[in-house]
Length: 303
Image (cartoon, rainbow, N blue to C red; front, side):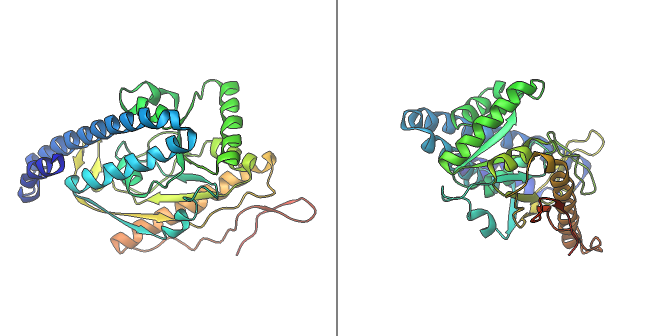
């Protein structure tokens, strides 16, 4: 019923002629629809979380997947965003409670929840900054779903959280989804901010692979820059990249792993945009992931 009502509200947005006024109207109405959807699904998550709480960690960690899909099927169509997912099977491999991974993705705007709702796998929890815990509804739901909150100003507390989640990963066969940039970065051209070290320390500590998931640069559809604010309908590509192994790596290898992963993801992010716009692709990517040779020397080689 809610979806039908919101769908009727959004009909005028489809037929409006493109003008400065219509762009602003779409921005306002789409943003209202988005925040409404977020609030409704956070409430659903809270109610489900309260039911799942006494059942144990495993059920609470499936909660995020359920709420994400609920948001995707009810509100994403109303907003007019269509997601095309490439190589999703590489991520589904880690959604059966048997194999664990650290899932990392680029972070553009608050609208990233839209692409997360499409692809967020089962048995997965989020790692987020401590400030999100204080947001009404969203923060409460994330707490109930066993999200991990990190206080980046408290190094000792952050290390303690990493140790705890590394043990949970091993014990429960879960995945952790992290935005390694640490903050949002919305630009006209595909780009990535420098990566924080947390995701890479955690992957090496647990000896599990990193699974990069990229959402195509959607600045042309939605951005909140004061000079060019918009929230349009359209198609966005998501691509799951090959997992990056960490077996055998140690804490001494963190920076090399970060450098490789950043280059690997940025190349494919640019490639996605080039494919969508039929423009010239970036130069071929030639590096392979860092690994340990038999004599324990770190090796970073070209293909």
